Length: 385
Image 1 (tube, helix red, strand yellow):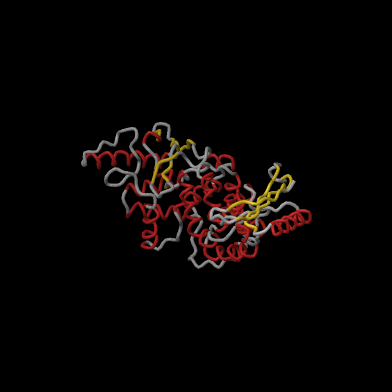
Image 2: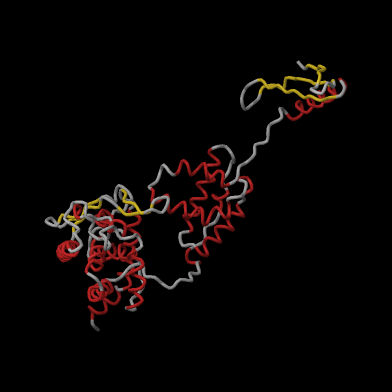
């Protein structure tokens, strides 16, 4: 089935070529032919053809070597799919994490050159400085997994790394309390009420007594508050988009969209703040009785920037020598104190808007462990001898 013929080149010179049938391509299931040109004599063409036939008989059809793309190239393909599966705020956070911590280490490497040893080195490095290092492991794993799905690899080296234990972390930051006790929270709010504006106090009071997330709190509108029934409905959250712009979007998960009750004292503060807000902004010619009016705003009646409370807290805690806590710590505080007050796990989960009950149980475990530590003291105090 081979053919050897003479032909004339563009420059007028004569040369020989051969064309031969190679067999059925196992990948495409189609007949495969090859043509080789440029031989000076018929004999040279015959020798080259014989070598090719011998090579095919020995090793099978020649296969074209697949050029494995880099991690960055696979990431770009994965990202186009991923961006349609998450909220803009999540996309913004994850894209930043990838570009800052993952691509500098993996981006230029060909996917098939990434080894388990190399992955382990990067995991160990992330562990030394990045609190949410498991997220980096997860993102890297998902990107390489995409390479597996499109047939570039047969195994994912990130699946074989050993995750460092949290207890081994050398944390250079000063201790930050995950949440306040009842006494600490009371002290914080009393100091806040004496020294700061009513809007700030109301924000922290609502956050501490409802467990709202920071973004949920800053997205609240008066139409979400039923002051006659004493309820707050969570319908939006303030977040950052892929490009860093602050946007209002639907809550974190379907469980985050919820209606929760508020206690009478917090309700009184809300009513007082609504009146004060109206008085202040009327002086500026702004009507705050519109349904879309936000509860908490800046001097121009626009939403407060997302890190407003964080920046305030740093200075306030330092000024009054209070134990350090994050803004999210007030949400954990509310959850913890709900358990101490005897509220059921299911009720707490629904109030907090936790999708996974494990999140609720982690805080519950802390509270119960704390109670266990006090058992002996309670018993001794009761016995009194």
